Image (cartoon, rainbow, N blue to C red):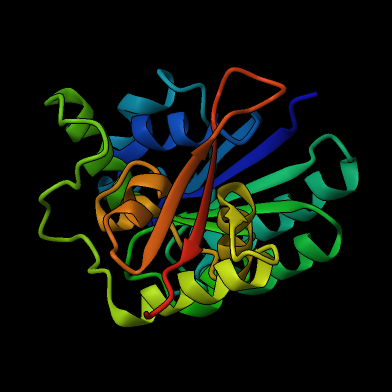
Length: 247
């Protein structure tokens, strides 16, 4: 059964240009039954959102700024999130913002056994990122869809200036994760590796480095071996990886 998700968007903090890619990404993780965006719709800077709300069935929530220097939008989102939590109508939340003010909310929702997916810009403070089960950089979603439109060869890294580099620190993270779930021969099922990487680092995503999937990313690093095995149950082959040993 597919999980129902509540999608809560901080309209003051996310550009409207990303809404199509964002909603298609969210659909991978569940059924977005509640979709709300918060902001003061009397402000001219939010006018671009009005054109995409109907197309994506997102419900605008009006929130006036009652006092200077206070973010009423954040408070409205947090109150609604708790109301939705207690209604027991969803199994997860998607919090769309680059604001660290939602760190405590993400933590509280996870304490209630909710799956929490964060989406925001790369400027998002780390406390909010690590408070989520998974965090997705919205800039990468835009790059991925541009790749698909220009028919980039599958498995090849995109040549984008804003991609992260595969540093020794990243390689060490992957290597240690493989060791954590490997069998006696050092081989680890890639699905287990990917799952543990996500738990260790919620914003880990092969797309951040220009790869659509984890398999081509690991294959591009000469520190790892990749092996494809027949699947006795389904038609898809199973991918296993292990750390190369120095000879």
